[in-house]
Length: 593
Image (cartoon, rainbow, N blue to C red):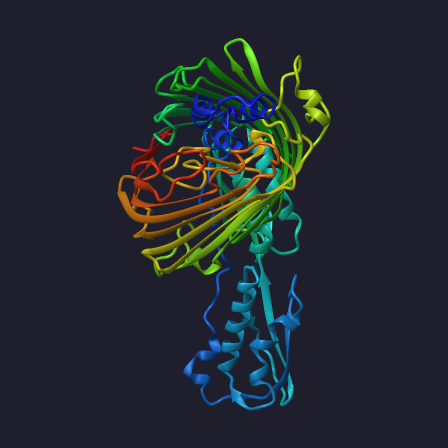
């Protein structure tokens, strides 16, 4: 809470009356880390991760299936696959072992051929298996000839923009392999598609040189500018119910696979809250390593009752280095390390009330897993709405005493007494260690029914600054409650939803409507020891509701729902009324007609 540290400080040292200040504390929320992340433009737009490699080696009919060979049989004990590369012959043994050592119609060799070709295809190889003319003595060896595709050259087609060299850098190593393997090419192709503003697809065609050699035609589409806008009414009454945000991405300014982002969020009453954000990221090397830097500046002047000239300012600078340890269509693992520099001030008119300066080193892992069968499903599932998927992230954060970071108040709170400006919480430890995690899962027993679950949590053994606290409310867990209605050093929350029908429109001009119902729950714990009644306040919340999600092609998304708080929580004296909440997001550039 914005004033909680200052109010706790005064309550401990002076025993000040809290009736008026409680109202201020409940309404005057400085933006937490979660709130700032919600109100900013994501650096990368999520896209369908489905990868398509088109093309194959032509397979000829099997001549041994001709009726004229119907009375001919063979008996063999071994099989040789000539010109097989990249895979041990033992991997193909299941294609022929059941036929070995007994007399079979010669046409069964076609069955062995097709089984071997299927195994190769499942292993990612583009290959044709042929039965060569031969004499097979009883108990002898059958010889098959394997023709495997080799990528010999790349041709880039379309508008590759400034990052064409980066695309070639990702894919060129594929031309150095003895044979082409789609599974081995998957990482390179997906990394190329991950370049901001790009969509990359690979098509193979015969090179016209020797059998098996293919050329890779790389079809590239490039979008230099992207603009999104959002309107929502998730805010509190004091900081503005309604707010709007507009953000722009500029892709490929330098040709380094880079992206520049700029965004602004403002409440409809321009004086209540403004959040500015800018960032830049770029690729390093050809394995997906990405360095990014972001700066966020926010100021809030809440409309309190009774009125008070309170204002908060928050400055956050982040440097992040990420690497895709696993990059697949069905499974991903992204490892990141970074550094946050935070400066958050609260003032009463010209008088500083609290100030937190934090230097935080963090490590993070993001993961996801999607049902592989849904990526190629013909039964109603898709990459966007698979039969099942799950994922999440784990983050470890360590506060450091560097770059002017605040010190704890110390023994007797000597570092927080005048003339020093106190911390937002007098017991806060700016060098605390915090672990955060969240996970989600979706399951569709049938394509038109979705069971969705999300849990998020945080754990620490030390009191934290307000910025680092676990937050519950509209922006995280607890739809129907004001953002930050519950703040805690540790906490856990869960969001549960039942959704009906699909949210994927049939085309870019069609609408899709998805009704849903939800239940949210959250609980927090605090490590404060000296500051009742805040520590003794209610520490959990529950809410429920329902509404609809609406998608208009790839142009816009609307979420409209009623949310009912189910209990009184925090410092509130009543649980609050049912709220009608909405978020509307539209892609303005590019606009698909």
